[in-house]
Structure formats: C-alpha cells, structure tokens
Amino acid sequence: MGLLSLLIFIPLAGAAALHFVRDAKQSKIFALSVMLVSFVISLVLYFQFDSNIPGFQLLEKHPWITSKTIAISYFLGVDGMSMLLILLTTFLMVIALIGTWNATDKKIPGLMALLLLLESGMIGVFCSLDLFQFYIFWELILIPMYFIIGIWGGERKIYAAVKFFIYTLAGSLFMLVAIIWLGLEASKVTGVFTTDFMALQTASAKLSLDVQQYLFWAFAISFAIKVPLFPFHTWLPDAHVEAPTIGSVILAGVLLKMGTYGMIRFNLGLFPQASIEYASVMCVLAVIGIIYGALVAMVQTDIKKLIAYSSVTHMGFIVLGIFSMTREGLQGAVIQMVNHGLSTGMLFMMFGMMYERTHTRAIKDYGGLAKITPHFAVFFAIAMLSSVGLPGLNGFVGEYLTLMGAFQSSILHNWAYAIFSCTGVILAAVYLLWMYQRFMLGPVTNDHNLGVKDLSGREITSLIPLVLFMVWIGIQPMGFMKLSEKGMNAQSDTLLGAKSVKASGYEVVQPKIIIK
Image 1 (spheres, rainbow, N blue to C red):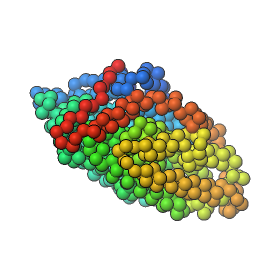
Image 2 (cartoon, rainbow, N blue to C red):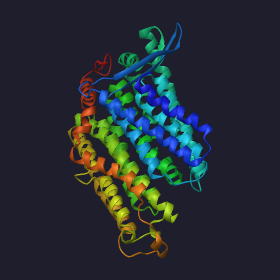
Image 3 (spheres, one colour):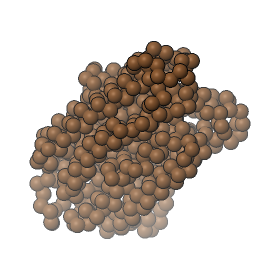
C-alpha cells in the first residue's frame, strides 16, 4: 500500500476503531494520535515529492470495476497543488482538535469518528485521478459534515445541516451527469467506458465547443456551490453560524477549497476552450462575490456570520485568479487557498475559544476584551490582519498575485475586474478592523466579561503554529509556491495556447503528464 492509500485509509480505520472506544477523553487522544500519524505521513509524502516535475507523482493505480466495456480504476496521484492541500488538511485537523479540545462534552466518540471520516474523504478528493472515485469521496464528505452540524451545532442546526446537504447534493448531480457523459465520449477513443482523468483529457480535446460548454457548466455549478461563489453562497453563513467550532474551522479551512481545486483540476484541465469562453462570466461572479460579501459583512452583528461572509469575499479572489488563467493568477489562487485556510480557520477557532467562555456571538456583548485577555487580543489581531492582507503576512501574497494576474490577463482583456476587486481589499480592512475595535478595544462594556479567562497553555500551543506559517508565507512565500509553480505554469501555457485555436474543428493538445 502506497503513502497516498495510507493517508486515506488510516483515518478511515481510526474512525471504525472508535466504535469500540466509549470514554470521551480516550476517544480524543486516539483521534488526535491518528491525525498526527496522518500528518507525519503527509510530511513524508512532501519530502518524496519533486517540485521540478509539473505532472502527477507517487501514482497508485489498480483495476477496480472492470469488464469488456468498463474500466474504472482505483487511481491516486498528486501534483504541487494537491500536495499543498493535503498538507493543509492534515495540519489543520491536528490544530483544530487541539484548539477545540474542551469545546463540547456531547457524544465525543461519535464526533471523533466523524472527524476522521471527514479527513479521509478530503484527502481522497485531493488525490483522486479517477473521476468516479473522486465523486465517491466528494459525496462521502457530505455525511460526516451533515451530522457534525446537525448533532453538535447551534439552535438552528437541523435547518443549516439540511440546507448544506441539499445544496451540495443537488450541485453534485450535475457533475455526475457530466462524468457519465465524458466516460461515454472516452469510450469512443479507448473502446471502453472509463473515468480515468488522463483518458478523459484526451477525449475532451476532441469534443465540439458546444459539448464542452455544457460539460463545463455541469462541473462549474457543482464547484461554485462548494466554493461558494455568488449567487450559490446562501448555505454558507447558516452552516458556519450553526456548526460547532471544529466544524467551522474545517469547513472554512479545507472544505471550501474542494470547489476551487475542482475548478483548476477539471474545468481548466478538461475544458480549456469552454473555460476561455466563460472566463469573463466566472470573473464577474467572483467580483460580485468579493464586493457583496464585504458589504454584507460590514452590517453583521453576529461575529461568526461576519467571518463567514468574509469567506465569500476571499474565495472570490481565488476564483478571479483561477479564471485570469495567467501564471500569476493561478499561483496566487493556489497559495490563497492555503492562506484562507490558515487565517479564517484561526479566526473561527479563536472566536470558538471565546464563545466557550461567554456563550454569545453578538458583537454588542463584547468590548474592551484586550484589557482582560491580552494574549487573546494579540493572537486575534494577527489572524485579523492576515485576513485583511497586511504586507508581511500570508494574506497579502495571495491577493497581490491574483490581482496581478487579473490585470495582466490576455483572456479577460479588461482591467475593471482587478480594479473593482481592489475595493474588496479596502472593504475587508473596514469590516475587520471595525469588528476588532468593537470586540477588543475601548472600555469593558459588559460586566459579565470581567471574569473571562485569557488563553490557556493548550490554546496558545494550538495557535502558535498557525501564526508561524502566516509569517513564514508572508516573508518567504516561494518555499510554498515552488511546489505548484511548474504545474500552474504548464496549465496556464496550455490555456493560452488553446486561446488561439478556432472554436470549431479544433483539438487542444493537453500538457504532457509526467509520471515519477
């Protein structure tokens, strides 16, 4: 069994083993141990990965569902983008569990099992190179997140869980139809129905532009809901507000990235001509999301809902970078996926720590906390400034590159996308700094907060690694960007090459897949 299979099946086995663990503390220790093992394996994977190779590496392929007419395989592999997201996933799972160790005392073994199942599904999504297998992992993630929100969530947890489930499931059906359609098209080339990503790349290059467009939107809608891209975002604030803290951290930190990952891997990778055709539409929606999310965040009275709407803005920047289709834009989108996971994940986790002490989400119930909890104020300020995009911290790098990509894009042909997006940067400073002022500064406005305790040693321990990565990426981003540089450059060159091909009677030459 290869390392990628171990990454998927160790958490899965851990989730099954928790059926025999009834003690709450023991189940937490066991789950944390499994997550730490997964993180160590992902580090081993990282050191075996060669960033100078643009294609997929560490491949594992075994026949799965085969006959004379069907060839579906268990097929895993990673490139630089998926390597970064796997590292983000295994890292955040450990940090989130440590940071929310005492957040709930309700049905702990069940919660730990669902978290491990969720980790297995997320890793499976990021390294699946067979679309049938990808779809299974994509849908698998719905189950644990539905129960995490529905059992351990807030007052309106059932409404939020059902809304999340229906939105994602409905969008996934479009993708399922597109996968079947692509498999049938591939059968005309290979002689068998296959969902192998490489075979589908070859088959999709022979499709007419009309068919590419239909399939592009089938995938795009599914991924846009997961991002979420305006106007498919309405499930996100409810899910974040009602989810328990660890659910919000994983949802913002990793799950949203599945949508943008899918856009790069499948929309751009399988349908380059259609992607060019509709790049401006996707960027218009991204810009609307950037501005709309910021404006709505400004008027929120609930801190979790404010942070949730900030995610709509930040994910809009990532989509803008993707569909600029420039090297800078794609690189900015990939690193911003990591940045958003760190900064917004930390914001949700820190507010969860405060919520454990105060049991209120209303901004008006706070004020002057910096005098009572100075350590909390410092860490929260760092996370907030990272989300704002302060130079020297990680958020600045991603936003700068996505805006540069939008400015330089020969496909968008319009600086307006980048200019209007810049207003999102300004508005982010407005609503986040204003939130911090009302939350932390000034006199203590609520006497009930006078007894609030500052961060514990365990909580500080969970936050320090996040801060270190924020500063590290902000000061020395190339150490991280180098992982995906070759792959994103090859992707951009392919798209720009496809731009010059006529809309009819074309065949796009996909980048050569290099296997190590």
